[in-house]
Length: 185
Image: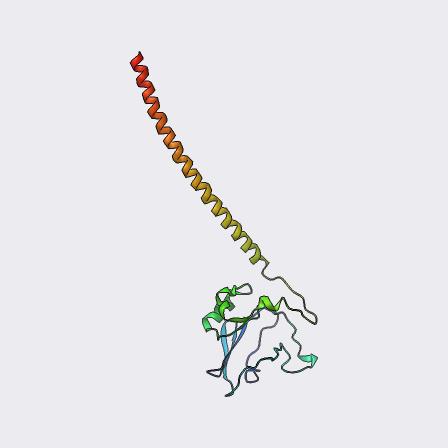
């Protein structure tokens, strides 16, 4: 919105989290940078979002090449509800690899869906959180190993019980045998 333009600057040369919120009912827009509220403004009465619009990065309604977006974008999402300041801070402090699953109920535009779409211009994909996939695979493997270990433990407990019963029977039979030997002697 033009009312917030020029009221804050974004860092150059480093990753940052930016979150814009807008509430139709309260006519309030807010800008958060790295989880901290920077700007709060009121929007004009009667202002609403309409279907079929366009989302521009760095162009501010201009077709001029001088306003091109020149950076990297990661984890862009749109939510149906205004996120709380606590949720915004949690996302920002979680860093590039923050897992948005707990907020997925209100996500209407998901980063995972954006990266599947066709792109134009000089766009390349960088894998930022490859460790998350490895971690997830490791967790699955650990869960499977835990299930196997529980099964082995249960079998070991069963065999230990059987061995103890066999040992008791052996002691009983050994006692009978020794008693029979004593009677014969």
